[in-house]
Amino acid sequence: MAGYWDGPEGEQCPQRTWLATRVGAAAGLVGAAYRIILLRPGSALAALQTAAADSVTMATLGAVFGLSTCLSAQVREEPEDPLNYFIGGCASGAVLGARAHSYLTGTTACLGFGITAALMKIGNKEGWRLTGPPKL
Image (cartoon, rainbow, N blue to C red):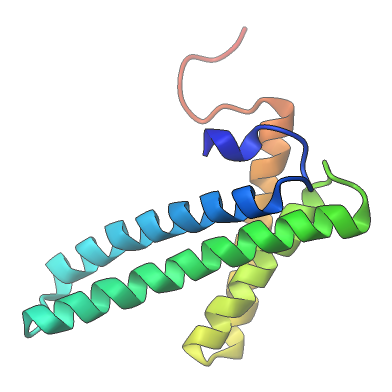
C-alpha cells in the first residue's frame, strides 16, 4: 500500500479508493483460498462461488474504507487526523455487519477495524516499525 500513503490525505479519492479496493480483493482471494483448502466445498462450482463471494465482500470493504476515509478528511478539513481512519474502519465494519445480518458483528467489526486503522495512521505518522532492527 505504498501508493496509498503518497500525497496529502483527502485528495485523489478515486485513486485511493481503487487502491484500497484492489488490496481488499487480493486479501479476499487469499482468504478464500485458505477457506477452500480447509473446508473443502462439495463441488468446483461451490468453490468458485465461495471465492467470488469472499473476494467481492473484501473488495467492498476496501472500497468503503478508502472512500469514507478520503471523504471524511475532506469534510472535516483535517486530513492528517487519525479519526478519519477510525471513521473509515468503522464504516467498513458496519458494512460487514450488514453483510452478516448481525448488529453484534457490525459493532465489533466497527470498533476493531476503526481502532486498527487509527493505529495504522498514528504508526505511519510517527514512524513505527513492525519488522526490522530497532532504531537506536
